[in-house]
Length: 397
Image (cartoon, rainbow, N blue to C red):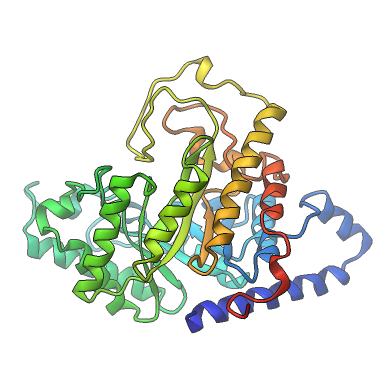
């Protein structure tokens, strides 16, 4: 286990102890107010403090604490955070030579103030990148050397600004097709196959102490999984530093199975990198496509049958969701020696991107806290997935 991993888990346990001491000092009125807002079960970050970090992706209202209930829940439950959008290229570097770090600065400050492991998402992606990045002043595609220079300048500026503060970066995001081949993005078309290795090289130069990740969805699909293994081994052979692969884990009730998730984590761990679960949610709404993609560009038409629970989720579906989460956390606990971090993509159901994707205007229920920030049965199922796990710290069994 790396000193960074050991240190951040120790810090997590100290923070949990400090929270207990602070709670003891509260007035009865303060305790009742807190009880009305947060679950009574132990926080996830405390329950899994010896196993892996537990986090969520935050929107701007949460880390700026305009969403007070959401921010309170984040501080109570999680010890790592990821940003939904504020560090994506179109937001932080919208025009040549112009950076907007104001929201990202607040995101990092929120994590630091609350003693959290802060993740940066994402440096190189085919989506949410301004057109100018790939074009010259005449609107023509730039050369390999020009695009490499723009990539390096962006990475050195963004990673360099948060050197030593953002502890891990999704360096390259979603570079693979479903068949495991490299996506024909402008990055690939202009630079070539080595653009991924170059991005990792630049990120390591910008902050040699930061953990660096490759992040993608549907990695349980055998062909894509095989492609990701090839990519990891290629990066290792090139000398690039890669700490972990991020499996986004945008799941369905019927996919992946526990067995498939188990074999996927084992296969990635065999390459020698850690396996982070980076964007966990479970979509329980009916689909009008058998496609298991999480490609943000996908848009589908909907109807009432595809939005069956606009007001509340029936008990039968709460039970099914809880079982799925419980089953997955049993797998995660089995592989806790290989997993550093599990991050939910959103804090509560009302925050989830699945309310608007791939069909706009639906009411989705993919997370473990409902729209009122109350713990759902899935929360309890997660807690029950690892009985007796706190008997001894990881690595000392």
